[in-house]
Image (cartoon, rainbow, N blue to C red; front, side):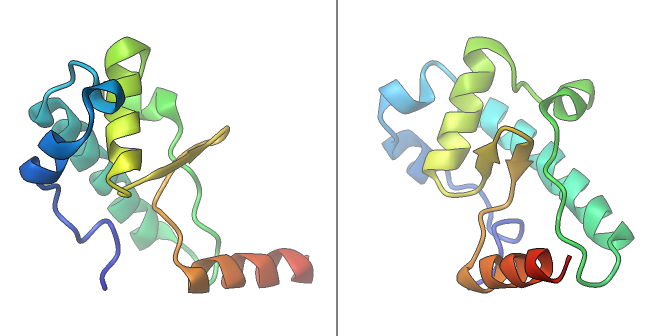
Length: 113
């Protein structure tokens, strides 16, 4: 099983989401936002120091790069990506979904601090 960055978005999976989740957002809008996120994550991985925890992507940074992540459209984009398990969100921003191993590493790193 690869990471979410390696997994492509699937139109059929998107279309299967309930309209209450995706709203009036189009697949193209979701794909464009996810492509921007993947580019930002790739740049982050290249610059990452060994064993450094990943940093969430801030919504303002995504917006500045052209991703629609604010307002009603942004809510639909983020909800759709969350429902398809391509991202997780928290108060700090947007992250890749964690695997069990990633959570254990993060916990271990925080205990060492």
